[in-house]
Image (cartoon, rainbow, N blue to C red; front, side, top):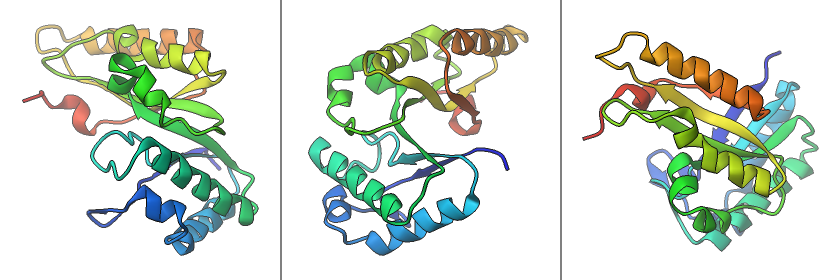
Length: 193
């Protein structure tokens, strides 16, 4: 009965699938299957289509991405899915470095603006330094912020730094009225090469 965060990326196996082909309906069978599974869950599902769309599996233009997003929503509507909360998620760097470019990928209909961001070893940054631009972007577009991925590495010179960082994140996100936070580990703890 817990809310779930589900991201579906435009790829099959290790092969990226073009957004244009998704928009054209080539993968409708898959989209309808996903929609039915979300509907069967019956509880809230924060649903993201191809998060970090400017990252590894970039398979078309911003217009292609928006058209594919619209096709995914159409499949959910056809399956009468009512428990999905639509979250558009970009990487923190997209908001920090080129929010105008990120905005080109923003679909017309979303419920929340999401962001993935990490405080990595060797590149220690504060919570606001990572997430403030995304919060401003969400606010400027009339939406609440959703944190799709967050993690913090240990600071080898200060055993309490990570705990303080997490406490600061909690206070900051609470003040910003963030809709949800999904804590992840994965890449958060590796040093950048």
